Image (tube, rainbow, N blue to C red; front, side, top):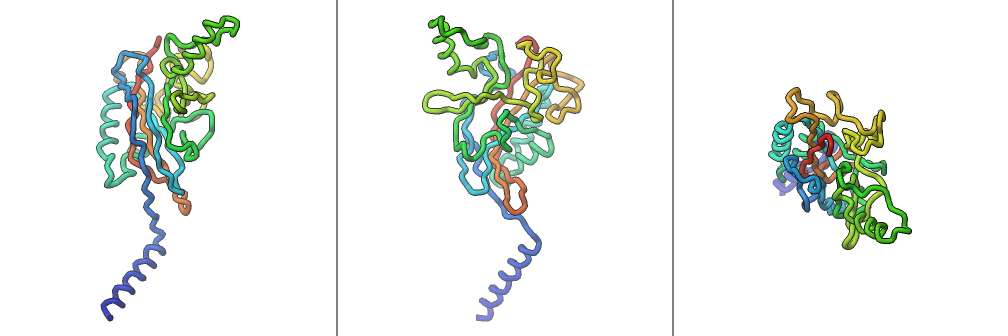
Length: 266
């Protein structure tokens, strides 16, 4: 009896201690698990330079949604090294370690669109298959033809279903087709695109389609660039939850979405 009483008192004291110290509750978050296209910056095929994955299926009350983080490099070896460092701690023993290293150590930034949400794909979107391309490339769709030219118009409408092959876009799979949002991916400040060299020539002298510069929060500059007029972008997806008491974020394991090059003239 005395032994049981001591155990009870010990538990009560421990509870008071934890409460008084304000220790945060550990929130676990289910990670995004699947990539359907994992591009590599070394690929020479622009058609493959898109990201395709499934968002987290987490549904807990603290879950906010699935976010996408990116970093721009001008040295591909630095990208590979930092990516390997992030993935080396991407284990279930400390689920937030990789996200913490990605965000706090290597300063990866949130990819954003025009929707203004706190995360790229909010909880209410559900677990969905997403497809994204960062910029337009050669052989894009071009302007929509007149409906009076039935053949060209119908061909254009059919091609729009696969616009991720050529155009900057964010699409969500619905049935057998992707439905595209009316906005494209932007850098963390919501004002600058990934069309660094203004391939479309639609922002001459503007501030949207501009190259990264040393000091940008999302850019890792190296004095020894891997190739002239070439940048490399690595992306990760991660599930995010918020502690309602402390408003601090908890992260899932990260999902490597791949990397793409941005080259002048392409």
